[in-house]
Image (cartoon, rainbow, N blue to C red; front, side, top):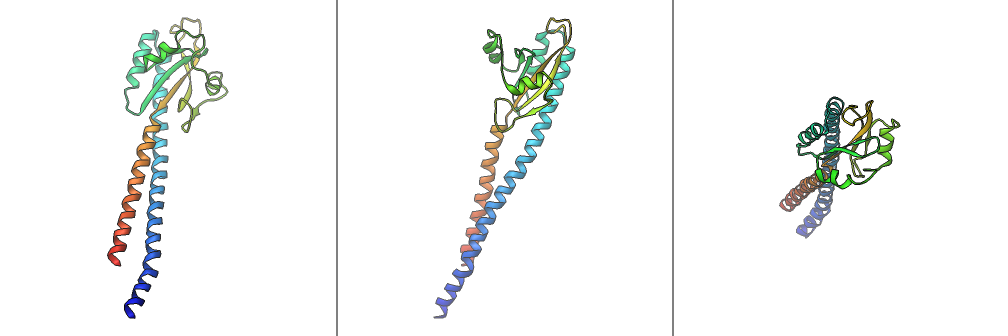
Length: 195
């Protein structure tokens, strides 16, 4: 009779502790995901601003498109950068880190078109951050040297940057799930040992 009461008492105590441990493990995994994601997004934003500043300095100071193209290619070597594209006020691609982008839009009158891009080029928006969707994560204004575009004055344009946010997010989700699963396994093993 006492063994039966002890087993019932053990079930009454250990089952809630097991459930609490599993819920705590899931919460820790979710909190780890959100805190690391916020930190990574801040770092990616800072990195994108650095890239935009570097490309902006090149656009203002270089006189030939080939030089600007080389600068864009050199800047885009970073593993966290997926696409860098520079467009003029008519949204024609001036330079990009992928030649297929330039070739794809070479025969069109209009290049890459977007409402955010239009707003940035015409000064209605200063900086657009669109990390959760869209083709580009960051869009910022850019001023091109007059001789670069064969014009009389400097011309407004924009730089579009896509970081590898999607790949980072999938890696982060996988890591958070691994942490949560490992914690759940530890809670289950400790519960079985205490039983």
